[in-house]
Image (cartoon, rainbow, N blue to C red; front, side):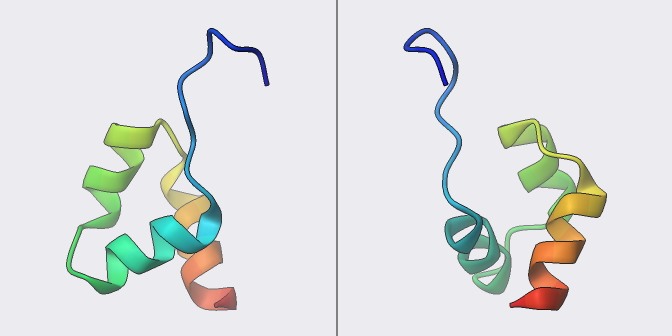
Amino acid sequence: MGLNQDFMPPKETIVDLYAAGTSVQTLSEDYSIAKASIYTWIKNN
């Protein structure tokens, strides 16, 4: 990851944000992560 790229939080952080009530849609838009990836992380957590 280059220094100029946006920060991407670890998977655990995304899952924690979801558990705290943030929608998958919002997480996907805010962090430019595919919704399918987020759903997989949630399922595997």
